[in-house]
Length: 170
Image (cartoon, rainbow, N blue to C red; front, side, top):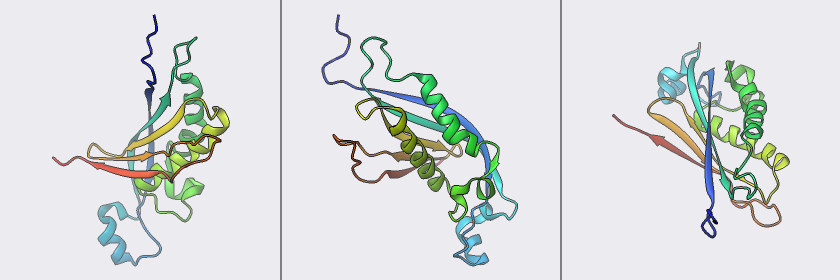
């Protein structure tokens, strides 16, 4: 029996958690402007979050194993490229990518997507499973999502990733 409808693809989402602190502060703004823009998130001592990272992969399952991707491969990639960099860290001070970048969760999501995408193409064949989405849940009310571009035949990227912010208002 053929269980795969013709042309169908599967999406698999893996979820991870990491804990990190940050301070939202832009050197391009005055102290008053930073306070006005970032509010309590501009606290000089910073503040922390229990972030939830979701990584979504899309493709066709292997006809022999029935798996879209080996979960251990994805876990290892996320562990080495993201969690080791961010978990229990002060993003402003400990993550080199944020030496000159305000660590908003928009920027964290984009940075995570860039790190994973760069490593993804080295680990998985272009014809294999695609990394399609990176979502970071910062709080119960704020989630940030990067939709990764499609790969064209020949391995060329199409347009830049798009960030969507999801807010839930009570």
